[in-house]
Image (cartoon, rainbow, N blue to C red; front, top):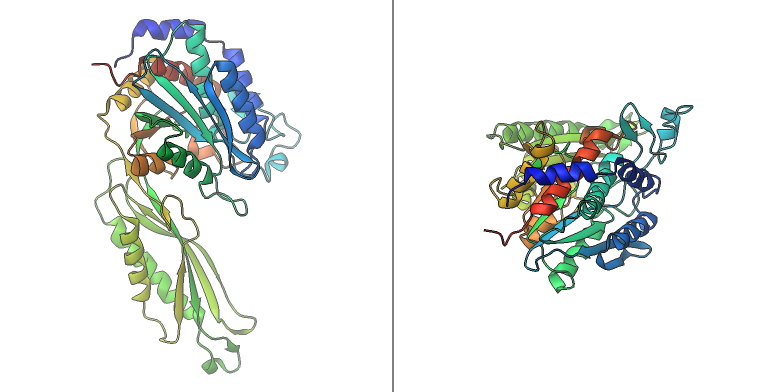
Length: 419
């Protein structure tokens, strides 16, 4: 599998930039905050149908919340590529206030300002989804039939932050369809999280832990009758930071860096009284190859090793289970895989300054494919994760258009049956 320079030229000539931007603006203009993905999923179903996909299916993973998928046939039958990403976005609270009186005031307006398209979901990750659909349209415009079947699957419930959502229900349902044989197992997958058109072949793992420290409250005038949970928390915080130092002293992973513990929240105190309860929240980062069960054991051991009053009780809760009961597992795929090499060549044929192999500074849902299905998966799409989830979310227009050409070139050459 290699990229033909003549194909790049044909694709660049055939690209309809206005139509591609219209697609992205319509996507951004269809709100899909987690829990309300249905309208956007319906828009995508229409686009896949217009593209000529077979088996276009809207299937609910929760009441009123559908995934959408469709299959674009290629010339061959033996090879299958999956392109996937989440349809939901984070909330838009504060956006209108931040941009009041400007053309960016609407989070769903898709305003084009200073060479970028602005709005909630532009980077995370509607530009990625639209890149793949526009790339398939571009192949048709250029008269190119991809050699392999392309399975599109766009799923909900990836983002956290909304009540009773954000547990990867969408991809769990889709993976179950693959396991049941309702959808063929792909040979390779691209998950379209924003990477600035670089290729993320590894990602961190994580767990979120809430630690409840319980003592006994007492009136401030007789503190000897209480058991001070806040004082105990001081010792536990010290133990957590010491544990983080141990993790950070490990040799870093070449793409993902160091593991660590980050304390993210502290609640506690009494009303003119000895504090009877405190809660510490934290996130722990894992490197590829590390095990979440081991991480939990070592974390809890470090906390229980803190010097605290023996009457203090400590309880652990893990509220962010994804592909593991306590969090999300790390992943890594070989940089030498033909699919990785081809995608890198496709990007660099369009943007020589991009296509670098890097590690994801976030957790997303590739582990469901890599670890559960043994499907090699990388992240690649336009957009910069550093402005996602913020009131500055935007994607550079040229990067989006370059991504379409690069993804089309990748589609045009992906064939695992080729020698």
